[in-house]
Amino acid sequence: MKTLFKLAFLVGLGALVVKGLEAKKEWTGLTETELRTKLSDKIGDKVPDDKLEEISNKVVDKMRDTGRLADESGAAGAEA
Image: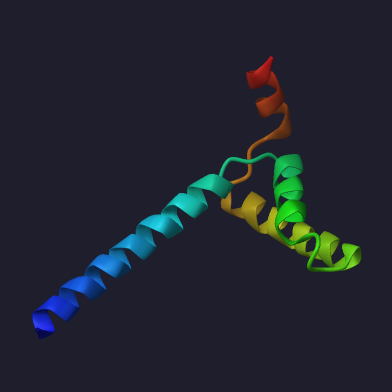
């Protein structure tokens, strides 16, 4: 019975890891404009505008520092 619980725990943990990686992939590669729009859609109705701008700036800076933010000009060139 303990083995069954351990197995169920490991399967659940694996599912959480996969879901987290999918969410990370969904946010990676966005342009700054797309990122700000997505943040506004997600939390815009829950926080005041000045706080939303502060949060957006921090998220954009962090994603730019880690290299997960796409270049605006590169995205525009790829669409054309």
